[in-house]
Image 1 (cartoon, rainbow, N blue to C red):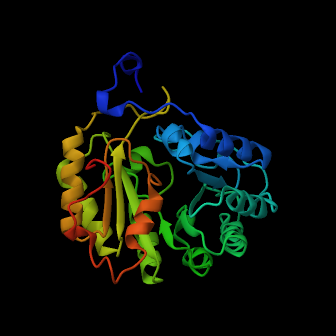
Image 2 (cartoon, rainbow, N blue to C red):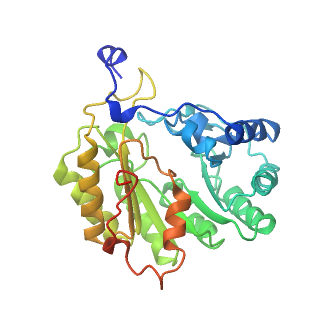
Amino acid sequence: MNKGEKTKRLPEWLKMKLPMGYKYSRIKNLSQKYHLHTICSSGNCPNTGECWSNGTATFMILGDICTRNCKFCGVKTGKPAPPDTGEPYRLAESIRILQLDHCVITSVDRDDLPDGGAEIWAKTIETIRKLNPTTGIEVLIPDFNGDENLLKLITDTRPDVISHNLETVRRLTPVIRSRARYEISLKVINGISSAGIRSKSGIMLGLGETREEILETMDDLIQQGCEIMTIGQYLAPGISHMPVVEYIEPEQYREYGRIGLEKGFRFVESSPLVRSSYQAEKHAEKMQDRNKIKYVKNSNISGPGVR
C-alpha cells in the first residue's frame, strides 16, 4: 500500500461486517484458552467478522511466525519457535467442543524444519479425525518445496479437501511470493489430484494481472486436476506490502466464476471478499455426493457473488 492508498476510499462492495455475537466470542475465547492461532486474525482476513459470527474459522498450526516474507501476506515473518507437539490434540478438542461439521486448517511455512512441518500436519489431521469422526476436514497446505515424499505424508491421511494456493498468475509470482514457484505449486496440486483427493486453489486479483493471464491460470489448474477455485480481491495488509493496482468490479468476478465453471471446475467461489476458506463448508456440501452433483458447472451458481 502506498501513501496515496491510505486515504483512498474502498469501493462499496469491499465493506466488511463487524465481528459480533455469541459464536464470534466463543471462537475467540476458545482460541485463547487453547493457545491456538487462526489465519483469520494472523492474516487480517476481511471476513473474520462474518465467518466467526457464523461459527466458522480457519485454524493455523505450527505457530504464527512464517519463515517466508511474501509481499501480499499479513502473517508475521521471522524465526519461529519449535513445533508444539501438544497442538494437534488441543486443536482437535477445540473442534469437538465447537461441534464443527467442517473444519479448515492451514499453517505458516516452516522452511526451518527438515520436513517443513509435514509430520505435525499428518498428526493434526489424524487426531482431528480420531476425535471428530464425522467432521469434514479441509487443509490449506504449503508447497513443502515440491518434495513429493512430504506431500505424501499429507495425502496419506486422506483429508476431504487439500488446498494449495497459486496466489497469482505466473508472471507476478516472483514479484509477490518470496520463495514459492508457480510450477512447484502446480506440481503440488497435481500430486493432490493424483492421490484421488479433491484439490483446491485460489488467486487474488488487483495486482496488475491481465484477463488473459487469469484465464491461462485457470487452464493450468484444470490441467493439474484442480476441482475447486477461489478468486478474490487483493487488499494490502500494510504499507510495506504490495500496493493494490486495481479494485475489480463485482460483475467481473461473476464473469470469471461463470468462465471457470465452463472450463470444468466443479465449484468456483468468485467475489471481491472471497478468501481461500470462505464458505468452505458449502463447497463440501455441494460436492459430498458425486452421484447427485455430477458437475457444478451445470448450475447457475458460481459463488457468493450470485445470491
